[in-house]
Each structure stands twice: as structure tokens, then as C-alpha cells.
Length: 261
Image 1: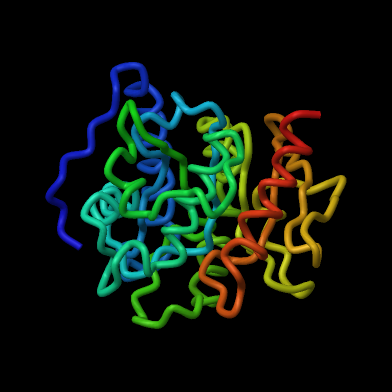
Image 2: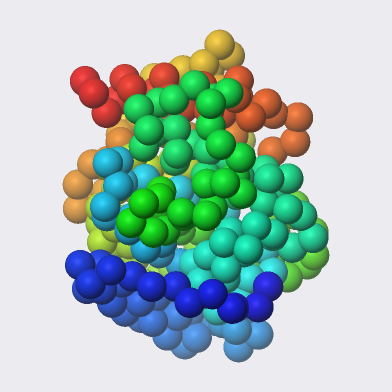
């Protein structure tokens, strides 16, 4: 995906963008000094899209890793979303990104019924503008998976987590603190009981499940800085999961409960 549409932040977000960019520079420099050079070249920065702080609910998504993205995740995906095409799929077909747009649109528009949400390509027209939705996004691993396979590269993710755990302070928690979200949505980063990847962010407490099958779990994420509203759900590209029943509806129910207590 080649950059072609300039990404413009409003003046009141420039200091936040500067803070995120500085954190990514420090993180990247540390990675360069503490891992093999071929791994450091895979570093992908992330952060937030324009007008994120103008939203009624500031939403931060946390994914596992970038797939074949180079340099700046936000800029590259901004261009893809605005062009309506991600890789060889249209935006409407790309579950991972379309579903994030649907969830954010619904939560920003008074929890509108799923059937009334516009197509992702319609939402994308005003995405990251004064009239549209926006959100923040960070990956647990900032190494890009270049395998060409959508299955996560666990060894690569664990390498980034191991290196980052050597930092003098928790940069995962620091990035969240800079972004200061009202709601964090995690995408099943633990995957199963054998992995405990959320510990790199902080401590999760007070779980409550929502959905007809308990598809999402609302919790509090407690970091060294403060606590946040946190919803854990299936990964947004998980196969055989229904867009409304397994994601949107239980996320809406959980959000209503934890944001308006």
C-alpha cells in the first residue's frame, strides 16, 4: 500500500501526535540496540488517527501485530481505509478493519442498531475528519509479520515482548497513558490460558462477561498510571465468528454497562 493521501491532524492534536511519535522513536531506538538488526527493521510505529480526541468516546484498539506494514501503521492504514481497499480486498470485505469502523461508528452514534450502520466504505469517506469517526490503535508487537500468512507469528511477538520488558519503564502502559482512552478494546491477545500477554500492559481485574455466549469480557485494566475500561473479545479477524452476534452486540451491551454506571 503506497502512501498517497496526506494525513492531517488538527492543531489541538499536534502535541499529542508529537508525544506518540517521540515514544515510538525511543522504543525503536531501544529495540535497535537490543536485538538483531534484521528484527529492528521490522519495527512499525502506531498511535491514533486525526480527530481521535474529538470523539464522544475515545476508543483504543489493541491488536497483536502488523501484517506486512512498513514504517508507520497509522499512515499506511489511513490511506488504505480512505481508498476503500486493503491489500487485495475491498474495505467492506476486510473483516478486521471494517469491524473496527462499525464498532466505533455504533458507539459514537448512541449504540445504533447493527443493521443501521453504513457500509465501511461509506464510513471511510468522513473517517478521521471533523465530521467523521476516529480511534486509536496500537499493536502488542510492533514487529511486522512479513510471512505473508495471516496466522500470528508467536515467536516474533514474544521476541518483541521480551525486548520491551527490558525497558526501564513500561512503554505499553506509557502509550496507553498518552492516548488516554475512555475505552480499550483488546482482541483476545492471550488466546488461551497458556499465554498471559496482557500482563505486559498491566493487571486486569473485575471481569464480567456479556453476550449470549459470554463473547466479550469487560474488565478494568490497571497500569502504573491509572485504571481503564477494558473489553476483551475475539480477534477481529477470527474465522467463523459472526460480526453482530459475536462482536458488535456484546460490545455495545458491555460498553453501556461500563461507560454509564
